[in-house]
Length: 462
Image (tube, rainbow, N blue to C red; front, side, top):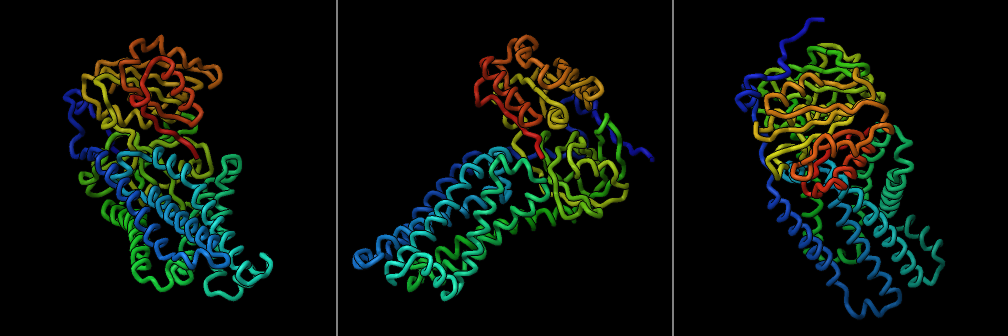
């Protein structure tokens, strides 16, 4: 296989602290924009829910089943709004993602997820019991009547069932037993569930019937959410993929089970990104085109080339090594807040476990020379120290040091970090690797006195 010209360590850029020719820096995150967005979301919750509930009158509350209907409306509207917020958290809005990063957004998404499902389930129970009181019938009889007689109730019931099923499948103990590809495809049904609920809400919701202003406000909320999802999860990736037209030109072995994928594309000088960021990669090959997986760039762009480095840990990543030159690639991104913009201090320490070195490798290129990086690389054997020579060269030009910790994960004493980097409490610390490794390393550096705000991490997980 012919080798392409891809200089993995741009020595000229490293020595002079300039980026490789043609590469473009990623924009700095703007936390104030996210703070304003959070305020807007909070006000939107108050307006959207409050406007709908003001439609309730005292006579309606005093009527048979009135209180239960009020509670049903309250839980339904609150749950629906939170579901829209949950969708927005993973809609890849760039100015939000650059501040919180994927890990931060997913933490918020997971923390919020139980509430919409619980509230919407409570909504269904409250209203069913309320209608049963009005009809003076049994709850199960009334449930059957509602589903069979009222328009859009069957679709709403299916939507609720999908939400509950997705929530159950997302429980950690079950999630880890499901293939990533299967879980991802199943999780997409949440969009279907919300779409099914929309028609039911507008057509039958007690707070909507006869209240055009409330309908208008909620229709705008739904429309904006759908528009942002389409724009940033579909539109922007399609535009970037068509603009850059990436294709594989070489698969280069790096270590046992690890390969680098070198791609060629157009207008890569216009692709603004920061070292440490990742893309969602969709390889347009048989059995792979329908799924996208996150991989970090293992070097800043060298137009017309990009490089990512992949370790075979699952079906998809294993198949990457067998891809052929000429395979077209679609991208979504760049994403991630694991960049030099997160730094609070002049000096940094970096800790990488296994393939987590890829994020640190590209991030090193963005560091100025006065950061004196202390880099700790962990692997089971020396053969598995991926990109070691490149990391050493970049660190050397920044007057830093590289340390190696070898052995099985359970045999590596992360407390040794304090011995290797005695001034670590005065540094920013960047950690990348598997979830277990990152948690262990975070705990170790916290015990060494590193403040939480100075710890930045990227988790590599299926």
